[in-house]
Length: 326
Image 1 (cartoon, rainbow, N blue to C red):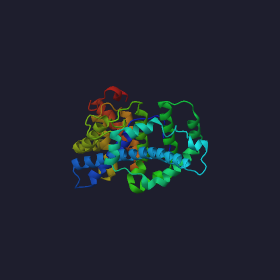
Image 2 (cartoon, rainbow, N blue to C red; image 1 turned 60 degrees about the horizontal axis):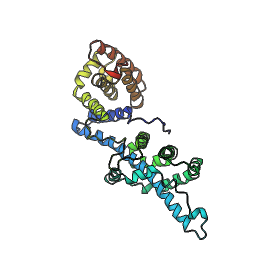
Image 3 (tube, helix red, strand yellow; image 1 turned 90 degrees about the vertical axis):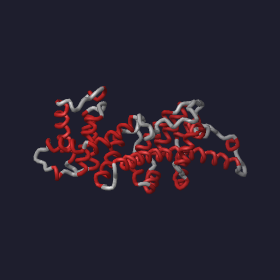
Image 4 (spheres, helix red, strand yellow; image 1 turned 90 degrees about the horizontal axis):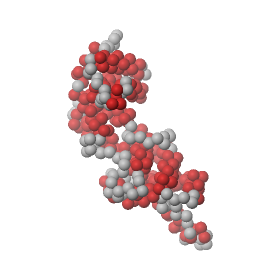
């Protein structure tokens, strides 16, 4: 599992996937109302935030282990000069200080009941691998000391020693089935937060990448709510559009997931003017590869292409800004 150094916002593919899962739950669960479904959907997305908080706590635990190592060295029977005068560059890394001093972060840890102590043996192994690495030795021997160097080092050890640790991802997958598939997406969220920190980051301000479903104006929130509610509210209209374009297909034979994917794509075509048509088609082809039948991608590709051309000609699809790049 590799963490790309290009840090983006919470990916739209992840949001589409979560919305697809919520719509499938709505479709098969007669007792699930749209309101309950939306609540469950955002609870699922918030779990990503919890996993990102776990990442940060693991990072901070590396500092705690480094401090313990320093104190233990001082209590040796015959401590060396280096034991008594340790290099404090790692434990004084400015990213650690920002997290420790950020009151919102500390409150998030408490309210989400984040505790990495059950995985402390894995974290200790991560720490041991870190201090034995050339990367760590180079950082500790560097004469420079600035925020950018500190941030880049934390980014690199997060990518190399935490994100790519199979034992860690497996341990959290056992706690929450969704977390294994969410581990990489949460890593992107964590990395974005680290990259968004500044030397004088406000102590009471939420970490940069974290979003809340209470923020009705957030682009990601609007996007999810639009897809979810439009696919439900307009399901009959969308079904009519789909059925009228079927050739040699019986609508009763269509897989439930294929129909949900098609309805979501129609919602995105019509209700999300800034998203280019080609992007929408490609994204839902990818979803069909992951969640539907082997033949679905060909079927969905052909049908969406045909529908988009027709709806564009009737001005039912109207794109603006970036969405004009069809």
